[in-house]
Image (cartoon, rainbow, N blue to C red; front, top):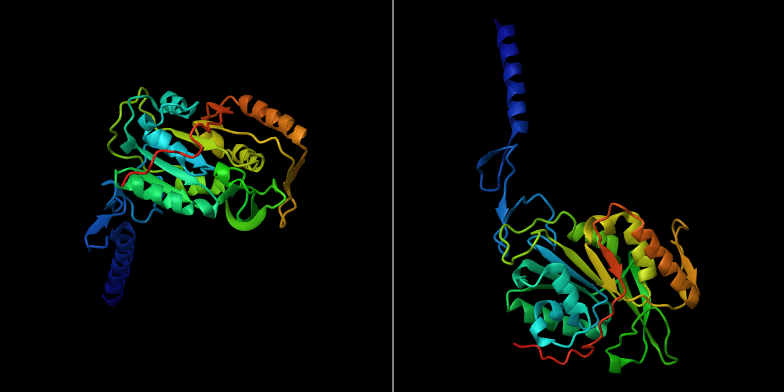
Length: 311
């Protein structure tokens, strides 16, 4: 009799253990089946999400614009406020081509990557300017590269051109060095954008109703480090729909990775042209790629902006 009771007790113990694995408790104490994960509601977007999943900056964004090498951030104004910039050379036409002309700004998130501390206040003001209009703009104050760390950039005495030459190249004999943080763009895209949660409601009218990511890249020769990393990691082809920007035909010197000895690039100014052409040739040879094109279009038509930020 005792042994039978013990056997029943053991069986009940294992049943209770199984139940503990099959059920879990939400923060409010409600018992929820493990096959139905608990959800919470995002206060900003109104979308539900799994609180155990790492929240991404791209969550709730239908379309995304990555302004990589933003300078004073005027390209995001081209996207959100095209009516204020009637004389753009190409940027607004690209946005119309990629996103359509019946787009709604509330479907977008824009991210501006700019390492120059001299432009920090401008980007903080841009963030406020867009936020009071219900629009999403996120400033990333770092250089982009193929690795994480710090790098030395130079103020090249071109304040009259919004320091568009702020880079790791000395372009003026009176250049002033400044150490800035750098991020690996591949990692940032995977952490913050890839497999983002799309919004439950879309406001604009889009022909294919598919979310898109468009990237502008103007990073003063860092493209020779960033683009190969995006390509060979596979991140470009599985995340980015269209790329436009500028290639800089400068002398290139990127040392290999200190830990592994891999990587590194040495190019003369003329060699950089050939490297770019072969890089694009390799890109266009790939049959299965989300990215439709990489085009060299640099729109400096409103270098100084010239349109006041409204409060």
